[in-house]
Image (cartoon, rainbow, N blue to C red; front, side):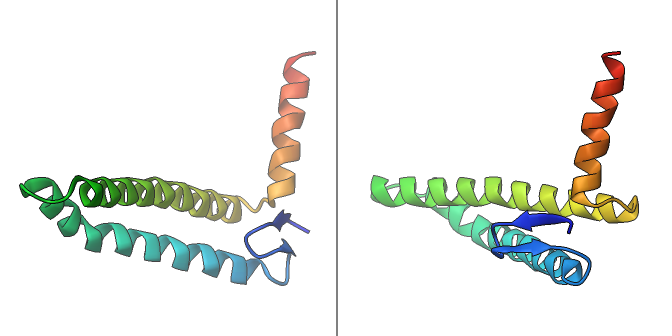
Length: 106
């Protein structure tokens, strides 16, 4: 077992880690695509006068929240790529991290 993933409601391990990485890849690409393609709408709403403030608030809020979500998903995907490149599982990484802090205190 690598870890339990609430996104897929299952444990991620040796046999399904490839599908988990694929899901993270496609989620990252989709988020980046949404941010990039909605940027002209974001700029157009900010640059025009006379648009209902509720619509401006909605567009700006949704675009900023999408940017934050994109950064989180991209960071999570990058972290798992780093784990793969260093041949760690998530549990091994957490154990190694907590183990190194334990040795520093002694």
